[in-house]
Amino acid sequence: MAAHFDRRLRKAAVTTTVAAVAVAALSASQAPDVTADANGRQTTADNVPTADTPPEQSATGNSPYYTDLPPLKSPSPAPTIGTPASRGPSEAGIPATVLDAYKKAESALRRSKPGCNLPWQLLAAIGKVESGQARGGRVTADGTTTSPIIGPQLDGNGFALIKDTDNGVYDGNSSYDNAVGPMQFIPSTWAWAGRDGNTDGKEDPNNIYDAALAAGHYLCRFDWDLSTQADLNRAILSYNNSQDYLHTVLSWLEHYRKGTHEIPDGTGTLPVDRSDDDTDVRGPRPQPGGTGATPGPQAPGTPAPSPRPEKPENPGKPEKPTPPDESKPPATEPPAPGTSDPSGPQTPPETETPTDTVHHLENAGATGLTAIAGDTFAKKISVRAETKAGKAVGKVRIRFTVLGDTDAAFTGGDKYAAVTTDASGVAVAPALVAGERTGAFTVRATVIGRTVAGLDYKATVTERVADALARTDGTALTCTPGGEFAGRVEVKATHKGAAAEKVAVTATLVKSALDPTENDKGPFFKSADGTAVRTLTGLKTDAKGLLKLPKLYADNTTGTFVLRLTTAGGAALNVQLKVAEAEPEPTPSPSGDASPDASPSPSAEPSTEPDA
Image (cartoon, rainbow, N blue to C red; front, side, top):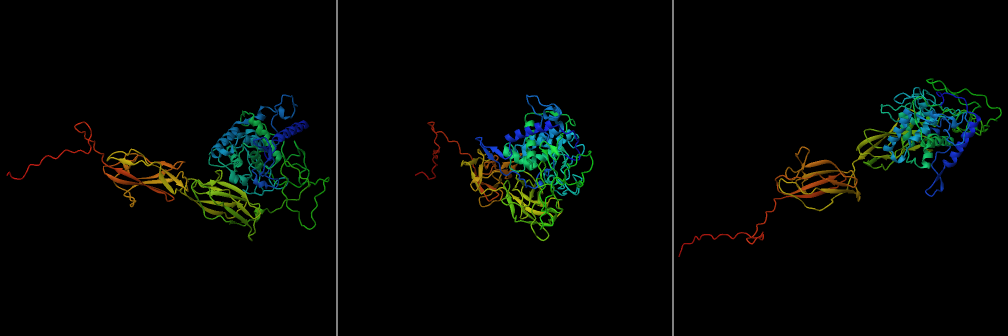
């Protein structure tokens, strides 16, 4: 990347030929818009970032990248000077700390987003083309680059136009944004995608652990399954929207999947060719505003490059005419890195972006945000960006942030989301999923790259509910005074006929079915220290809606008692408990047969009548 990478001699012409053949071969087998179904039939993938997707919606702002290809492993001898096959072990190896960061990020994503199937080799491939594996592993023990890695400023002059969004905090540039760090995040994307990968309490784009984990979450931010080619292509193109970028990353991904090795930090070699060079594997390309190439790298630690001076226009190319009825040509998107501009030189970019015109944010209709724990909120949060006059502003990046003591998050588990407003000025946040923690929290919407008041949305998570409780068996529950009930109470909770999992249940031994007051005598549960407890809280049903209560005991009071079970949502169940003396043992008759109904004949009473 510009500003900090060592330059090397350009490869010989044979390099161009070998590299082009390698790209073409890979392209044929892994075309980004073609996939194969279960029967091997090719199908076209949809929902891929398009040519007019705004650069600020990518991770890197479509910044330049390295185009060098992996070493070729061929049984046939290859040219020995400047070719991919001639590169040494350090070219194919990955510095130890950098490799560790990629593998730790993969492990974290397996736990938080297992359906994404993110391979660490994909992070390694992206890290290779973005920064040459953090400039060959030049990082400190905690993974921080020894000097910042900063790409060229995105001033619209040969690159995308992205005005400053971080006041120069990350890139040192308060006029325009630059891609930053070993994974080359632009500040506006890092603001919501940044992660703390080395648990030091900071989210630093210059730290390979933080940057790798952020890249993993970025690639998994949608319901993409990266084990499928179509979703893998989508994810890579969303990182940097260029077909050449896609093919280059896929080349390194395939190479690392076949095997790689660890090398010491700081010993990795740096790539040579970059996508904004005058000549690379795709041949010469014209430069917007002139024939010169973009600035070469500068020494580590120097400030971000300033806007480049105007270069003489190419006399061999006619200037694009300006329509006579307009004072200036319409604003156009700058060409993506690695492509040519057939229209020739461009006029300077517009000085005012849509973001500059935003005056305030308005609620676009999201109210009454309530969901049961574990459920997805029925309504999505939507916000409208407006000018001071109330006019809608499209193509503005809105950041949504979940705040407060809550485990609620957007789909995929993220607390942050960035969405671009549509033509009506509206940005709709991803679906919000309630966690298990109940209570109120806030989702705040802010404009990325502009200081205007944020808009807060209040949301509430309520308890899981059940509308019915029933015993799983009808066995009578009886006990003798001072004894232990033979069976345990088991119930099933349902909500609208379906099993109600994780529903909180309260069990209370009450005085009667009509009096819910806790009884002070009769059956009881035991606490950990063996004392009598007649109310239990914190009980929850399992995934099947089932709950088995602890054992019940009886004191010396006989009679019929009631155990009352209740849940949020109104479900209630009364369970009858009976404590009675044991039936007496039957007395055997003289013949040896038991005569339970026989009783001794009363003896004759002495007569009280006088004798005659």
